[in-house]
Image 1 (cartoon, rainbow, N blue to C red):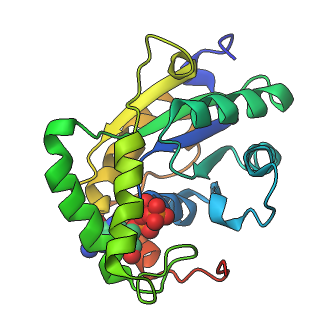
Image 2 (image 1 turned 45 degrees about the vertical axis):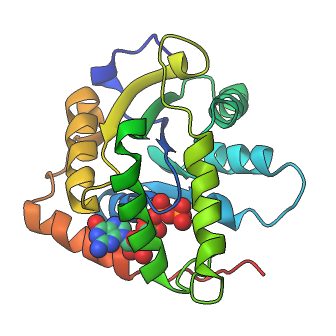
Length: 224
Ligand code: GTP
């Protein structure tokens, strides 16, 4: 919806992470929920087998009714997923701004990314809905993670579907989520100040506490 100036946007913003496993998507999402009360939905919580993409998009659309900003928590690492998400949400909600939370994956940086994401996922143990590292073979988990790395398609705003993004926020999968969270909030604040109107911006210690809370959060639903 390009009619409204970015400065006047007060709702209908969808945050679209573009990531691989263990980048810290859910940590950032939960920290934003804690700090601002925004919406968050995880793909792992889609309980159907058929039409999962449509269910995911419809859930994000419905959350926009009561939340000014919603975090669409899945990897969206391929253009086809971004295309599906943007199209299906836009069908029901024509004025949505899509913001890419782009965990940059330069090929030259793959080794440090592997090191960071594997360390997070393998130390997480069973505290995850679909990948329970405590009960799966480590090699099997690493293979799943490699698949996502291999298929990763970086944001390219010169062409569809990524030309639909209103804003792209580049963050680094190898650094602490605390730092990435700060970048995300600063970019959102400077582009869409209306999302933060009538409220105090969080202090550095608020950000520390939100990330700490997010990292201690236990998922309440596990896939078989
Ligand atoms: P998937 O859902 O598996 O794709 O992962 P994700 O991208 O949502 O990552 P998530 O936020 O679940 O983080 C993975 C693990 O790393 C979790 O156990 C987090 O608590 C932990 N984690 C996230 N960010 C940080 C960080 O900055 N430092 C440390 N030490 N751990 C982190």
